[in-house]
Length: 100
Image (cartoon, rainbow, N blue to C red):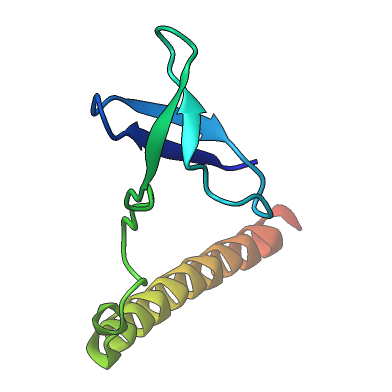
């Protein structure tokens, strides 16, 4: 159930009340100090969510950043491919040397 904030009109104090979506907004609520029902008004607060990082806005994904990423990935692939081919050549050279 969601939590709603209500403000007492006469004192300005706020309280939090759990209510179902289907329930109507309260017009009166028991005051915490004496328990007597007093008029309240629903307080609307901003949603507590923050977007951090990239990818949330249209300007975060530009074509130039995509091409830079693809170039970086392709250079990593090429360098790893060259290393494996060097290793294969070394193994080929060692194999004939071990056979007399």
